[in-house]
Amino acid sequence: MSRFYAIFATDKPAMLAVRERVRPAHRAYLRNAASGHGVSVRLGGPTLDARSGTMNGTLLVIEAEHIDDVQRFVSEDPYMHAGIFERVEIRPWNWSLGNPGREV
Image (cartoon, rainbow, N blue to C red; front, side):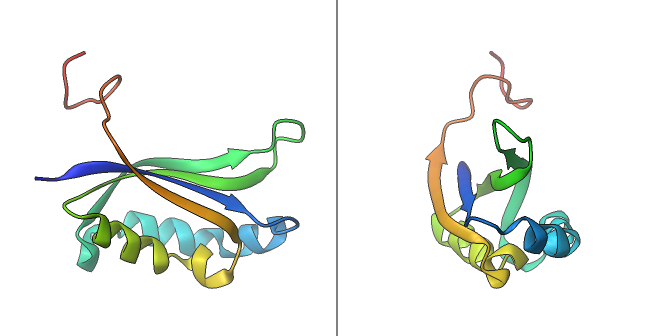
């Protein structure tokens, strides 16, 4: 049975230029997630600095059978290869409120 996972990734300081350069590859990777990874990206986007509004991290919700699939998927993300993240946290998540596949 699949479950949802929330991924919170925080950029290292001064990585905005690298993030912007790698972003097209990152977005293509997310859109092609199902092929070979066993995961589905359900929602995602950049987190923003509260004062400047500039991108400073990533939030993703992934659906997968196993956390190992999620960890492998995250480890192969172009952002990971570019070394922009200071911290990445993967948490199993029970998507209840707002889940389009579930009554509230």
